[in-house]
Length: 219
Image (cartoon, rainbow, N blue to C red; front, side, top):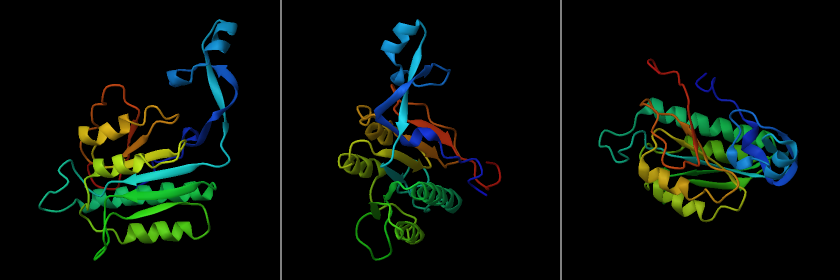
């Protein structure tokens, strides 16, 4: 399937407010999580180990534009959009299965609808149906620039919300709102669904772009 390369990672749902202990630093561990007192005591780098969270919010931000030019006259690339929607739906399903409050924020709209399609975070039994229905009815052109959606919604996110951005491209105007999340304990994660080369990371990036491989030839 198109999401054969996508695996849920434990870093999505660590509770950074509750430190369980320390472990020896390993290559790839975030320098932001170095446990300096423990490192001084042991005379080698130690990484903070966090307790798994029991109540967490996951916000999935989906960009329906399929390239950096969000208003291209020839419309979207349907294969790229399908992969983006499938990615968002699969992550939402996983989050809900784990019991997390999961919501979808898109810059798309529904036919004859007003404004962007947003499903506020919830964890009840009907949430997956709400998410899938909202995604299935999305129109292929954005109702709002993605960077504006991110800026507006990020200001309202409860502290500690894990952010996953699903987008075909990551232009600099989209990177700017992600940089604003740096004071938060968890940086945003980015799933790139486009066909172009991965973008150069902005200075001091808070995000970790991950390229997803779809079923499209040449990917």
